[in-house]
Length: 287
Image (cartoon, rainbow, N blue to C red; front, side):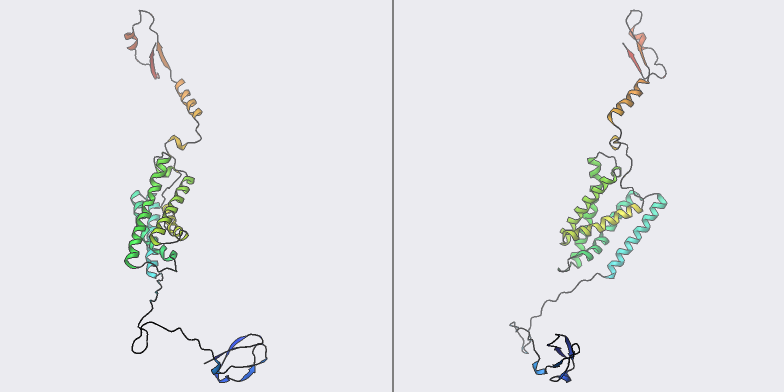
């Protein structure tokens, strides 16, 4: 068994064979003569006494609880990668074959992408100091978190259209869409924190994996999330009220108005009202 030796001059530590125990020799570093300690001079560190119950052989009957590290398995990685590749090919197919993913495909993608991304993301962001969730408990938490993540898309679908009085959610500007997506990201972070007991930063990264990947796949599929022109006047901020009134005034003045005056007994109201409206006349006014 090798003996640990420390040179008292240069404090260099090294090991020598036990056959040199009690002998002297030069230090490999400073070349000064040192003495190798004898085996009897070795320091023995004893473990603390175990006061727990013991069996007839003097061995402790209590066994410590050992922690098993749960590593990210390749099976989860293959499942997540397979789902992502499948969705990517479907997105490209919708883009080139149909010009964009239909509404039912968008809903299906939001629902199908959530469980594998949530499960894979948890393997990267969980607290290593705590024992991770496994088995049925992990499955239930993944399903609940996935359902809430999918429901958060209702914020994008209805909130901007209600607040900005839009016909469709994709009529909002990209600036507004960025704000809405940021709100969705923060809401998802709180969901991850509540579902998996994560720190807020880890929860933000966890929800970001899902929402960023879904947005990227939507853009690949040709889904127009924002920037679409709308039919409402609120979407034309450069068209002022004065310009609108002037345009309607020009249209009104360009239309001829036929006016007949009933001031004498020779012209009765019934005979004037019986006149046919001339071509190009928008209104017949009787004064």
